Amino acid sequence: MVELDNPLDLDPATAERLLATAVANLRREYPVHWTHVVASADDLVPHRALHPVFPGSYDWHSCVHQTWLAVRLLRLFPDLPSVPPARDTLDELVTAEAAAVEAAFFERAQGAHWERPYGWAWLLLLDAELRSWAPGERWARALRPLAAVIRRRWLQWLAAARRPVRAGTHANTAFALALVLDAARAVGDQELATACTVAAHRFFLLDTDYGGLEPDAADFLSPALTEADLLRRVLPPTAFAHWFDAFLPDLTRPRWTALRTPVEVDAPDDPHGSHLAGLALSRAWCWSGVAAALPPGHRHAVLADAAHLAHSAAGARHVFGHGYAAEHWLGTFAVYLAVGALC
Image (cartoon, rainbow, N blue to C red):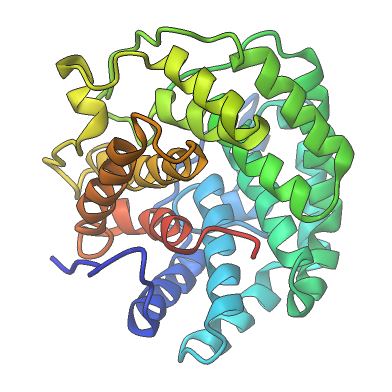
């Protein structure tokens, strides 16, 4: 097993491994997790036929965020050995013709909900990453028809949604809202940012005395911490501190040991077992965000910072060396923890 020494200090050697892995993932079409509703034999077409921009990395959402990972590393480490094949891969996959095919799928009835909200959020973050970086503009132009459909679908969904999903997996509403809010702010999309902020208030602002039991066996997100990570984006520091105190008033008690400390990862080679490795990484960035948002001297600031460091180290142990089930997605979480997005 190969470990990242420190995911918060992304050195060029580790960045090269992550970029090379991302490129290999984007080009690897099989195995594929194909989740479409099939109405007739005519619908039994290869994944690439419907999704030529994002045909690899096991499933659509992973291919989207592995593309984001490749772009993020190209942006931050322009001299890595894998930069030329990464650029070639993006040129091959992210074309106007391919994006038109993807956009046509999302215009269909199934496109109103397929990959919502997790895949949609990563797509909008990828779009913002490309638009925020001058060399990425050619790929952003090619992707624009697809991004426009997803943005419109997102606004329609939020306008009608009455309740959030508080799962620890792909359906989690708070995590997707946080990604899209950051993307909208980065590109100056006030309508999208406002929709996300209003939804965050509507879904979560009145939450108190969190009573969930975490984690479930397949969680890669913490329902509690993703909610906190979203609310610190939409509230001033003092208001966020009051909200956090009311949301987790007994955070130091033994019942929350499983939230404060990393969970053991018993089977990182297993598709669902690897989720718990991702949970450590996502909890780490949530704890980091909470620690930074709490006012100096807050009673939980030290706890949050310690939890961030502990989860960072725990998640880093599993980024490499556990096969395709883990490596087709975990690198994204490691880089998001290490360097964030959209700087």
